[in-house]
Length: 304
Image (cartoon, rainbow, N blue to C red; front, side, top):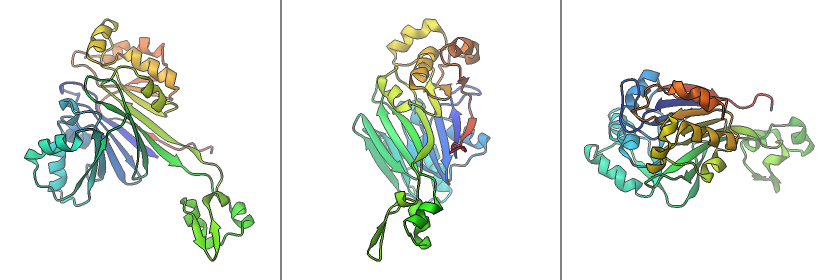
């Protein structure tokens, strides 16, 4: 299962009750953060989650409302005597940007590893996640992220017996290992059924609607998408500054055939986003208003 928490939902500036953009996920003892706006540590503590298990941080882009909380977070990690490395993922220029911010956190007791995104699409396998990064359309280089937790096929004792596989190898085969022993080769498909449906979460902010979003969000269990403006008359402004309205996000959700849509990254002028949800649900019924610390646990399909 995958725990998901939308830590902050604000765009541009923090407001009372609305911190800046950040998403956190937890899976199998590993925590991942997408963006780290101002207030990320505070809202994380209010949620009751810890930064200790964060080992991967992804950045959509380097505007201040998406990265301004990073130096403080790194300092807190260092002051907690962390020694395990942290992997940072983001658009070209990542290492330069992070090292510039680290002028106030120059010495850390752990290593920072950098993965810079140089192509329009990239796939990264890390800590049980399959991360697909995809370029979107903002006024600076910006990426969305699709996180997948793969799920292998069901183990069949009958297949293991039919293929005369010694029991001492079953566990390794279940984990996907190919075994060469005693002059024989044993492969996972000799004990497993077809791959089952996994878990998929897609997250994007600060962009106009793009085909890449539909492609990578397709069939997501949860799609968290920017809705900068709820007012229909703000569409021209959204186009000018390369952002999205609630209605454009709902259309993307509909076309991508996702299970659920959470709106986020609201303009400071959008005080009551819930006022517009009725019209949005006419486009995509399972739309939810994102709130700071809104959470869900995504689980594997129990019927498979």
